[in-house]
Image (cartoon, rainbow, N blue to C red; front, top):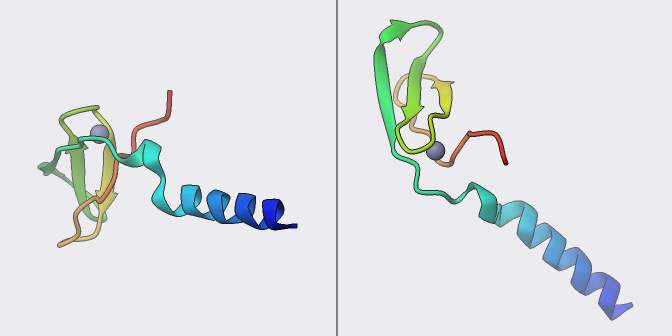
Length: 65
Ligand SMILES: [Zn+2]
C-alpha cells in the first residue's frame, strides 16, 4: 500500500514540477504582429506563444522531442 502512495506522490510531483519544461528559454516580445495579444518568441528554442498584454511566458512551449 505504501508503495502505491509513494508512486502517486512521485507522479503528482512530476506533473507539478514538469522538469522537461525547465529549459533556458529567453522570451522576446514580438510587437510587430498584433493580434489578440502579444506574441512572444523564445530565442533559445524558437517556440512561439501569444499571451494577453502584460503577461510573460513562464516555461518553454516548444514541442517535446
Ligand atoms: Zn524555449
